[in-house]
Every structure is written in structure tokens, then in C-alpha cells.
Length: 448
Ligand code: PLP
Image 1 (cartoon, helix red, strand yellow):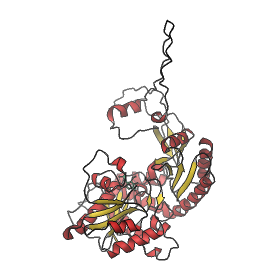
Image 2 (cartoon, rainbow, N blue to C red):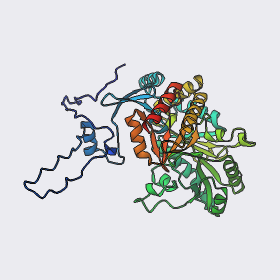
Image 3 (cartoon, rainbow, N blue to C red):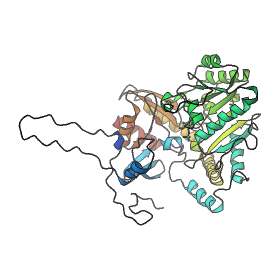
Image 4 (cartoon, rainbow, N blue to C red):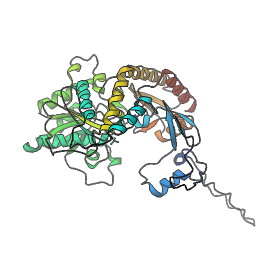
């Protein structure tokens, strides 16, 4: 297979584009812009030229044509396994996994073969028609989760949006619409999921938000109980707050939430977009959190949002809805053009096959333990304060802000993802190897 080591210099129209040498991690580089001290005697010295880093061609295209919603760093060109390369040919160990997406790493042959085969058969039809892949994937998700049905969409925000709309529809006739969510949560960037999210920094400027959300502290059952009103219809939580800084729900909280929601006839809505899909070593994080806890095996939310690792990089989202709420959405009540397309479902089915065949849930559980132990040994040194989470969702808490830490690690060849609350996240592919974890630990030790 051909992997380009540089961006091609010719565009599709044959125009040649010179590529300027890029400056890695430009947004995070410190640049000296101090003026020289004034000198009284003449002639006045010329100020030292300030080195303004050249933008590469790709960066310039972004400057001109891409909406600047993110401060980007590297220009990545290709990947293989758990490694990626930038436009200078530099190799990185990618344990950020494109923010918990690349479940099988990069360039996996099974995904490539499925994409190629399915592209020949049927890429898209429409949800006006049946397609085999969607039916089979829904069956697999129901078998893995519990009795119910699945609605397919394209992203985590959409999967959460379906949770919110499910609650609204369910409560509509009784006039109940309020949803209790947690502070420090993250549920997406659409207006509804933004309103559900418990972080002010991402809401700022978009007010007025969708009404009907109450935010309470995470892992605080009494706060949930106190927030219930006659208009409450649901409680929405992540099992592990990922963007918020890898905070794990306690078993008592989860069991208490299930009891409380049942008592008040509320839906328990579960955001498993980041912490789900075997990332903790089990299909959903509540299974891992409640392992060995009396009553834990019976825990089941009323609906679960999934995305990210489900498609391994091919966009797909899914919302599993438990019996007896599975038919709350009737024909015409909700939908999306691309949701559950033949292509997306074929890829998701292939990934599930690989995960099961290669026992990747066990692998990520073990690799997570290896990583956690290695990181815990560094606590108290290099500004490392704490290690949270498990499996393929581990947060390294540092004294420093996460952005410079992530930059330094990337310069040393390790890609990780920043999170809130001074946390840097490891979100490795489920097939990460023991040698790669050792490599990551070596880099962390050296670079921090
Ligand atoms: N929910 C959680 C827990 C997430 O971590 C994210 C994304 O990071 C989302 C929802 C939104 O997913 P997407 O970016 O695919 O819309």
C-alpha cells in the first residue's frame, strides 16, 4: 500500500504548490517578540529581526478557508497501527486515538477491506428503505446491551440529541420536559446537547440556551434527588466524565440513580459516547464500574448514546433504547439522512467482529492496568499529581495546564488529548500493545 510521506505538491488541477517547511505545534510554540532595550547613542541599532514562523501550504489553506474553531497543532499525513506521521516524516505514537475514535488504530486491513467491498455493493441507500447492515448491527448492539431497539445517526452529539428528544417525547403528554444533568459533563455541540452540557466555557456566546436543563454536581445522589420537580422527565449522565477530566461515577451513585429514577418514573439516559464501546474492558462502562457490586449485574439505563469507537473513524452514532421505551419514536418523529448507512454499518460490524475475535476488551483492560501502574509510579514526580480512570480512558493529572504538557509530549513523539481540570487523556486504540504502552511510559518519563 502507498502511504504518502508528504502532502502531494500538485493539486487535482495540476497546479504546483510549493510546501514551506512547517513549524510543528505552532500554536503552542513560544515566540520571542521582545523589543531590544533602547540605546541612547546614535546610530540606533536595528532591532533584531523577529522570526515569524512560516505557515505551510496546508496551514495557509486553513487560515484562508477553514472556520477557526480549533487551535490546531500537527499536520498528520498517514498512520499505521498505533503510529501516525506528520508532514515532516516525524513518527508519533498515537494514544489519543483521534479522541477515542480509532478503536483498531490506523490503516487496519479489515476496515480497508470492508470499505472497499461495501463501496462496490452499496454505499448509501436511504432510511426510506431497509438495509441488511443496519438490521444486523442493531441486533448485535441489542445482544450486547439488553432488550430494546437502536436508532442510528452520525455522531455523539446526535446520539445524545436522540436521548434528549426521547425524553421530551416520552414526557410530552404529561407536561414533563426537564432533564437533570451533571456539572463538568460534556454531551456535544448542538444546541440541545450544549444546553445539557455542564461546562459554561463551551456555552458562552450561544445564549439563550434550550430551556429545561438543571445541572447538579457529579457523583452526588442527594443533589439529583433535590433537583427533581414535577416537570422532571430524565437524568442524563456519563459513566466516566471524559472531557471533564476522567471522573468515574461511583457504584453507589449509579445504583442510587437507577432506584431514584425508577421511583419517580424518570428515564435514565446514559452518555457512553466516550467511555463506552469496550474502552473500560467491558461493553459499557457501568458494567466495569459495577463489577462485583451486589445488584450491579442488573443495572441497565433506559437509553444509551454511542459513537466514536463504534465506527473506528467512519462516522456513525447510535442510540440504544430499552424496552418498553423502544417505540416512543414512531414513524416520522425523528430521523437523519445518513444514519445507519450501509457503509457505516458494514464497518461497525467488522470492528465488532475483530474486537470479539481478538479479545480486545480483555486487551484494553490489561493494557490500561499496565499504563495505570506505570503512571502511578510517577505520581509525586514531574508535577504528576494523580491518575484516574481505567482501561482505555485514563487521565493523568498534572500541576501544569494540559495544553503545554500535550505539546511537550508530542514533541517527544507521543500524542495524547487534553481535558479539563489539569488532565491529559490517554484514549488508545483497543488493540494497543504492551510494547507501545512501555514506549509511552518511557516518553512520559523523559519528556515531563
Ligand atoms: N458525549 C461525550 C461524552 C463526548 O465525549 C463527546 C465528544 O467528545 C460527545 C458526546 C459529542 O460527540 P461528537 O463530537 O461525535 O458529536
